[in-house]
Length: 74
Image (cartoon, rainbow, N blue to C red):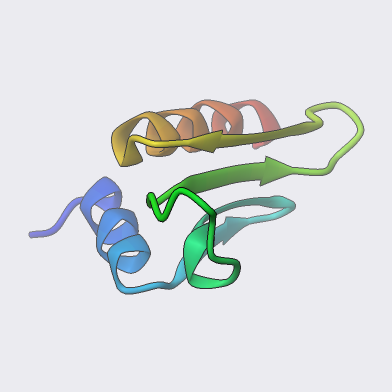
């Protein structure tokens, strides 16, 4: 059985994204090539209580932050 974390990771590797209410995580270089050519992951939430947007080099850090914010907005 595949975990929720692994499912999100697989989606990101395949160029897809994950959303929960106003929170999202995506691999941004699929949409906008970065000058460095590195893969970046963006965690973004635009609600007033939990306004947040950050880029991560490491997919595990990004997914950890996604779950952390998701707990807060449940």
